[in-house]
Image (cartoon, rainbow, N blue to C red; front, side, top):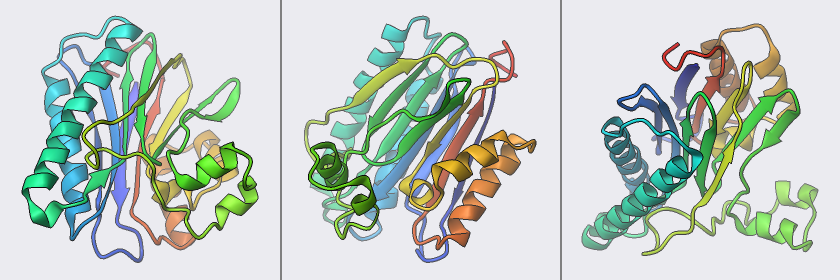
Length: 249
């Protein structure tokens, strides 16, 4: 297994409110995270950093995850804990009032991969079946598309495109989308904030993932394209490649 995390503040924003990383538990299994913070004066970076730090600590103290049910339960339980922590922090620190964050948290084992999703960051997989988005944006615009009120083309330029319906830390309770997939030899898994997905189309993602470059070069190229296309937002990604049967490769 190969994995890389990369983030860039982009060309417009003064600060980077995204966080993330790829972390290893006691059995060498990986947890990849992308969190895109929002709300309040510099509070977005607080929300995303707190989320990643808490999940990292929990994961590094976790023993081997053996089944998909265990992975799904781990993600649900611990993301709910993080949501409560963020909500309480915002409630008791006025400068963080209204803060929140998206989260993509993905447990990767040799036998399966489990994806947890809240917000409008995304997870994609490239495998022998093609390129597929694994998550559905929790946004007003996506809800309008899903219910047939606007087209996907209209959604690209909708004035309320950035309105998020679900995030960590903004409410006491949070609903988390969780699914388990197969992740096999030569597959690529891409987690990213909307700073990437809004600026790099699927055809460009596929082209970069399929070229002969290293994983680090692929990640850097995706960020470069997002910046060349405007870079108005922070740009963050985790890229994983299932290269062989070794968990520690």
